Image 1 (cartoon, rainbow, N blue to C red):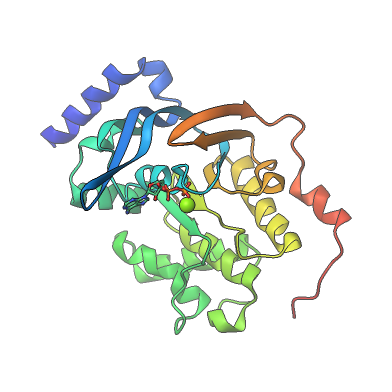
Image 2: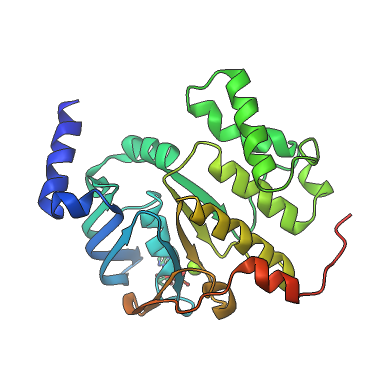
Length: 266
Ligand code: ADP
Ligand code: MG
């Protein structure tokens, strides 16, 4: 408990209290080195970034520019070599592995390019899985899993196995799984990388809806068309942020879908 109090104190030092309260993410002077035998790779070279609650940020940049390294840090899967990372005001760069895992499970939802679903497990069971660590009663867990599956439009596919679902449907299961513990932030690394263009826009429609209802989203993509659906685009090059701009006149995925030919999924 005392450790927690100290963590909260550090928060105050980092940003003005009124600002810190509105920030989902605050990254300060972050560097990341990887050791490769004798060689050292300097993957992040002084990154500063603030993301307010309710933002929808797309991260772009060529291969090797540090996007995944940065996302792994945001996702508490890896720590910066130096610098600080505040997640909802808490300095998580100071936490040990166990504490990081707890933060990850409580505050973050992840979506990946490859869906990462368990293949011998139904959509419902896949979505239920993260709730096992969340101290929920069985009944509440199933109810919650059903709710989020319905939310992503899969109310009628709950008993299907991943192999019985299209790519877009599998990614929606993965999104439901990411949402089941009510995360504060959704992190997605190339979530549309394996999907055709219409299905990609459908996934972006879900993201825009979730963001409209208040969820903070950080998405990595190399596709400019996909990045346009976010509210802000941050571009990495050589381990640094080179551009950081608001998206003007961003399209609504729902409108774009009306212009794309429909495909049958059944
Ligand atoms: P991106 O996601 O933008 O393609 P990465 O963050 O994966 O970029 O990589 C940034 C740099 O760090 C690259 O030079 C890459 O080779 C290096 N790198 C990434 N992960 C590791 C690792 N685990 N060990 C050593 N070097 C790494
Ligand atoms: Mg990457």
